[in-house]
Length: 327
Image 1 (tube, helix red, strand yellow):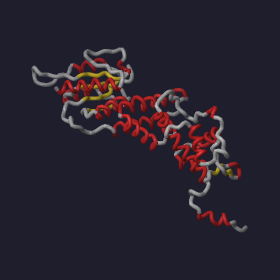
Image 2: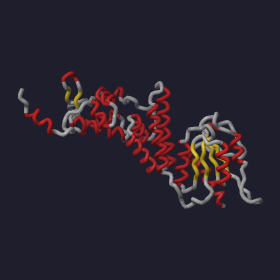
Image 3: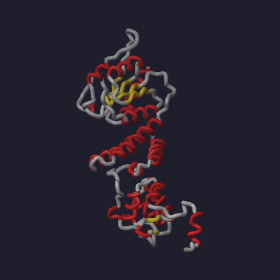
């Protein structure tokens, strides 16, 4: 059988020009195939070509349309609005009307509520497991608002939304929480100076109570203090009591922050032990301010310990403690 001109030319076409399968397009855009099918069902963004057997084949025009849809949703635009804008930009609005968005919520959308627009873009990127977009959005939030606002108004609401989605969906979305948490930690560390003008001054020690594995809140505090050029020493998760007290004696810190997410990890005896540590010459001995941070300390008390309720409160308290130790 003789070949048609199109068949003869096919080997010479680039892969970009050839129609793509749904799987190939999903890999190119960095989304799940189910997302593409959902967008087609909900918003009328489907392939222009269907091969025999009803297999989808996405043309270059379809690829450009979906790429614009991804760009818009990643920037925080709701999917229904993104579909409308993408179709209009492609000049296809009259040919492919967007369906009534009675179910305008994209598959896997997180229950965010009334939050900053940046949260929505971050959440959508996290659900798509789009690491480059998550990293970019977190960096943009810190650069634009600073660590404290980025943490309290962008990172925390999104992390809480992922947690609620996980709790209500039978252990699904665990991978989303892990990916988002990793990138939040990375963003906070990248915005924490290694040293500053007060590098030789008494530092602030930050540590999780023994058995406590949740470090993101004190990582945020560490980054926020770094923005103020206050010296810190971060010891991270589940610090043994003996190791913490040894570090406090060696460093002579201005303050010690003990983080406890759960009551089961909060240790009032350890807090009292740290508060009783003294150093220096007789007559001019010093001791650290002790800051009990996190919900695990609720309902407990330790002599002289400070109890901030927000990151802003903690930064203010520690700034004051640092100033007092420097005088």
